[in-house]
Length: 272
Ligand SMILES: Cc1cc2nc3c(=O)[nH]c(=O)nc-3n(C[C@H](O)[C@H](O)[C@H](O)COP(=O)(O)OP(=O)(O)OC[C@H]3O[C@@H](n4cnc5c(N)ncnc54)[C@H](O)[C@@H]3O)c2cc1C
Image 1 (cartoon, rainbow, N blue to C red):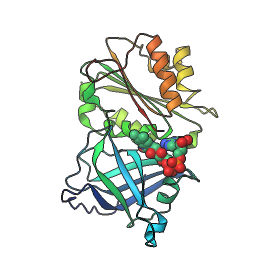
Image 2: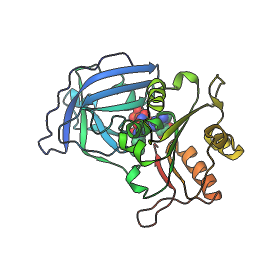
Image 3: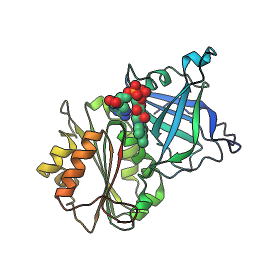
Image 4: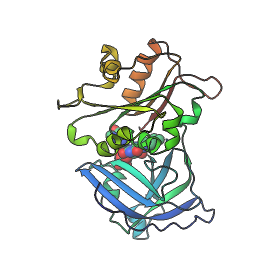
């Protein structure tokens, strides 16, 4: 990520639910993966793992015809102490929102709704030593926010980030994650970063879906860490098929969903 961010402009929302925020920076990982940063209003608070609703006025509105805005949920990649809000987006050629965001340049604005939302947050786990962060594709986004936050490293003994993407070119944020993994301090969590490709093979990666790798035991072997009811806590994020299949697999291994009134082992976020 070499592109230097533009200077931050961070007005308060003045209490408004919806504000317009300028794009400060953008980075294209490949033709269909994009990261952007927008100015964070000074009164916009969130926890790592939460998502923001961002919107674009429909093109007809821009010509003054219908008062519509297309809104979509996006996990926040930045950590709360960063002066911008960062998002990691898949650009779908026919996507009503993402294809249009991808055409926005630095300096142009998008809409931001307040407040941040979502329950994929670490405060929901009251105990546990080993944090398994499992995601597909852009389901990596909330985990980057967590890893940018020092307290995550102090809260757990081990963190396993298991990411599944189709091809090696879809592996984003790798350098940052590897730098973080190498820079943990004494007494802080050890991070294992497990990358898996479903449509090709490459050095340094596993091959196959996270569910297949879990069933075969390959994931635990790669992490050198067994699942354990006392120690393991799981977050699942991204493709709903993965989330559902993994949830069922983990349930079969004796793990339960974490609910507001009944603490468990698993918290999930479905992207569609
Ligand atoms: C809580 C939450 C957090 C989300 N966070 C992110 C995020 O951090 N990054 C992100 O790219 N998307 C995220 N999404 C999905 C996002 O809101 C949009 O649905 C997505 O960007 C597509 O919008 P679109 O208008 O371009 O496509 P649409 O025209 O609305 O097409 C939707 C279809 O695109 C596919 N799709 C949707 N999201 C994805 C995805 N992430 N990867 C692959 N295929 C997808 C599905 O088949 C879905 O039915 C999140 C969704 C939720 C509910």
